[in-house]
Image 1 (cartoon, rainbow, N blue to C red):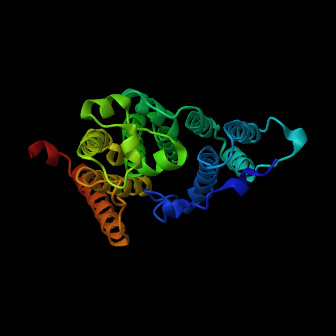
Image 2 (image 1 turned 90 degrees about the vertical axis):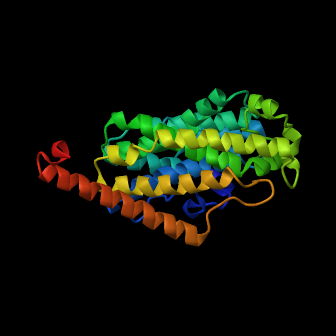
Image 3 (image 1 turned 180 degrees about the vertical axis):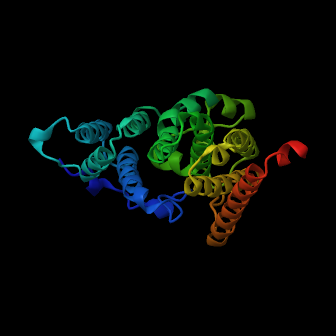
Length: 298
C-alpha cells in the first residue's frame, strides 16, 4: 500500500485560515503541534482525494489510526505522520483522543455528502474542528472549562471554510455542507453551487448562514480571556480577528463568484490588531489586580 504521505495535496500550514504553530506559540510546543497538524492534514487530504475510491480512503484512515495507536507493530511503521504524532504524544504523556476524533470526521467526509440541518453540521464540527482547539488547550495545560468557548470558535472557523469553499466542494467532491433545510428555506437548489455566481436565492442562503455563523463566533469570543497562557491567548485573539473579518466578508460577498480570503495586508493588519488588543487587555487586567479596590471603586 502507498504511504499516506504520497497522497498529500501539497496544502500546508501556510494555506490555512489560521496560524499553525505560529511564532507566537512557545517553541517547546511547536514540534508537537506540527506533528498533530501533519497527521490531520494527511488524513484530510486522503478524505478529499479526487480519484481514490471510497473503500481505499477508509482503509488508509484505518491504517493511520492503527499506527497512531501502535496496534500493528508486526507490519512496521509505514505511515510517517501517524508514527511521528504517536511518539510526540508519548513524550508528553498525552492521549491520542483528539487525533482519533478528527478521523471520525474524515470518515464522515468519505461516506456522508449531504447535511440536513445546522445541528448536523455542528455535529460534524464536533469531530472535524472542535478537537483541534481542545488539543491546543491540552498542550498548554489549560482547563477543560475553556472547551465551550473553544468549541464555538473552532466550529465557526470550520463553517467559514465551508462557505468559502462551497462551490469547490460541490464541483470536485459532490460534497455539500450547506444544510438542506437552509437551502429549501431560501428557495435555493444544490445544483446552483456549480454556477459561476450565485443566483439571488443561493446568495441569500449563503449570506444567511454567514450571519448565523457570526453569532456562533461571538460565542467563542471569551476564549482568549479564559486562557492562562499569554502566548496562546494572543494566538487565539489573532485567530478570532481572522475569523471575524472572513465572516464579515461572507455576509456581503458571493463565494461562487470570487475568492473570499484575506489578503496578505489584511492578514498582517488583523494579526497586529489581535495581538495588540489581547496584550492590552491583559495589561489592564494586571493593573486592576495590582490595585485592590480599583475595580470595585469604579
